[in-house]
Image 1 (cartoon, rainbow, N blue to C red):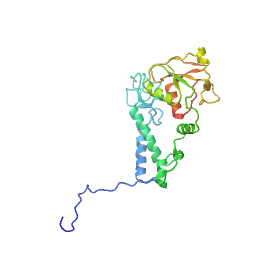
Image 2: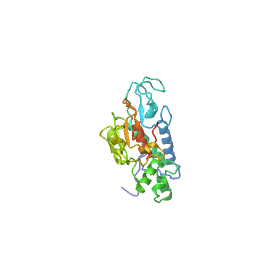
Image 3: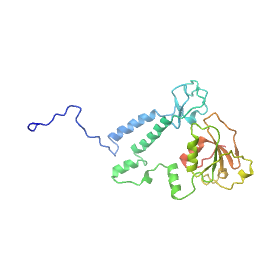
Length: 259
């Protein structure tokens, strides 16, 4: 190229530096938070208006609900527009549920609160202790339980999975039981059996003032399916819905069962 002539850069082709991430909350972070707020407005239940939890559609309209919010509407009508709900057995939208979980993680990263561990590292330019920014309640209880070498969540508990499982696949439930220290029963336990009632184990993670700590065998059924077994709550054998089991895992606690 003759002389000192510099090459001409055509408009639109000039490389530009990426926008700097501003840990203090302005610039790209602020725009990202605003975009996340707009997205979360679209991910709210049409009935309770909270962020969707296990989102389902009744089939006759475009309204989306938390699975627990419409357990009484399956096969009847939409509680918002009264369109007939022709689906008798709804399915959880797993892709939408994954998007909701991702939004929750993004919010923890982008918002200025005690969960923003990445943000704190960027501000101080050092690696912060993860425990200071961990998700409270269930995850925190799980970590402390492991560090203190205490029994696992379902230690001393046996589970029989009865009926068909679609919303919470049976294979996934079995893995959760096993990971939590519980055991799977191949036969449905009989409340009046001498063998059943003489099992001496105690549920460590049940509330100490509850009769539930003496319950060691659970018959789990899927509460969103058409299968509604006869209620059992006798001695060491209790009936429980699969949604209760999932809530126990999320909170790392044997939650009370409704009487």
